[in-house]
Image 1 (cartoon, rainbow, N blue to C red):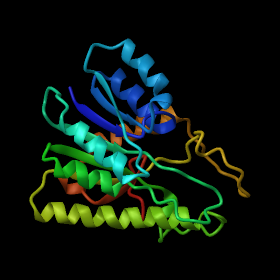
Image 2: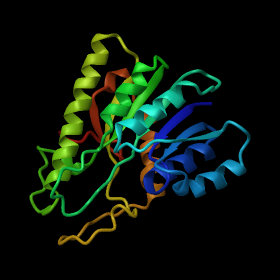
Image 3: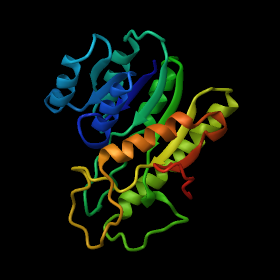
Image 4: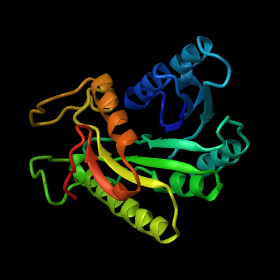
Length: 231
């Protein structure tokens, strides 16, 4: 039995991660921005044995909330006393991007590592929009989003190299989930999107990819299909 920490679990991809991980018999620690957004998670919790799903508050847009989450997280008790997988999924997308909507994923990851609790894998939710090699010039209005994800990719690559030098056993991954039909993706854009995935399709594939990677893969960028994505 594995323990997963899903940051950003109240809807869409994050909620689907929780659903599928619980269905495969693993334990989940799930974070939400506020109590009001946790209604579906509470429904899940009521059908499970005690301890299989624990919920904490974490709004990644504020350092105060992240720090409060880390303090509460440090006091949790879970059987293996380690976190096998962390999925950093929380974020905000405003379109068009006139100001940078930076997904504050690196800061929670650094705080988690600083707790001293062993962590197997940390997956950062990236995007194909982040790729400089596979630049998508048609994405009008996505400049700040793309820049923020590119910055995230660069940050996690540095984190992976630093951890390797410290002989850490934590694996750092970036992942493009595909074009997933979620509330956050429900925006009015000027181009057609092909190959839209249901959340359950994307998450099932991502769980397989995340679970298959080891230290030799740390600091790499993957698609939900298990293909290496160009930086």
